[in-house]
Image (cartoon, rainbow, N blue to C red; front, side):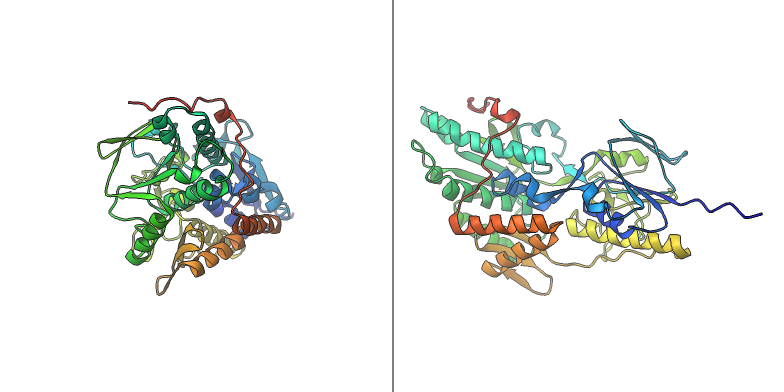
Length: 431
């Protein structure tokens, strides 16, 4: 009598960001039934969302449907759904609307959200570019501020509307500040008759002593100088004490603003709490060297939700390249484990360089042993980001948009859409 066939292992991957997508691809056509579940049907290139927020790119330029990216792998199923619970006893992922997903191995890669450090009520007044919806909201508020300034009759109100405050001096804040200035002083320069967009004020606030704190001090100093040359007002060593719909309180001073943007740190997705294990201050789950969750058999966490140890023992930063490397490593390790029972090897992060763009012909690149800045750094930044985009079409579109923008200073995605078009941003600042 023939023995019954061995059941095919079931692997569920929660999240199709950089980590989840890389893990799924590494498991493509393996002898396992892989299910990728995400609450959105597209993979988003988050590092370029600030360009959607500042009208340089359209959302479709930096997003691709998850199904089309994984369609060539016959063993991978994609499910659109929102995870509401994990039943570790029954080993089932439960969705809000959809079937229960049984698993033998679970890879948790749910990403992160912006961290408002106990002031979640600030999020409505100061969104950060983390989703397409957030980016569209910021873009609408920026453009509406100029539109309302054009018809404002009070000088103080006009000055408020032409003031943008950006909170956070990391890569997101620095890149956003430079892009907002270029939008105002180049793309919008000839479009208005009663205001001068070049006089728009951009304030970048950082609570620490310097911008880009994870970069060497020389690159941090260069970034600050480059931003100030563009006309950005840089404030360091000052904390944001309050945020209202039309004003920010910085070091005791109330600064009226037409648009407020948040970029001051991230926190792991709340879904990490479904695992029922302790999390750190940033909401991350501590994992072992093999990315497994101690005490939970066959459960792994990668990306922004994981506090994975680096070479120095400290948790690795919440970067796209970290999540991507973790995903590929775990997917290949699981594949070998399923094929021949090989133990999962420890993950070793390989630093590929850290970068941030400051403005036109100005960027910083830290490779550890050597550093780049200025035009060469800017060109390398552009090449790296085009390369990292998924799909030839997206790469071609972004390259063409950037070339056109560089030659003409124009930005073609200046549409005011969604609910922000109906909101009253032409109101006096909160006192």
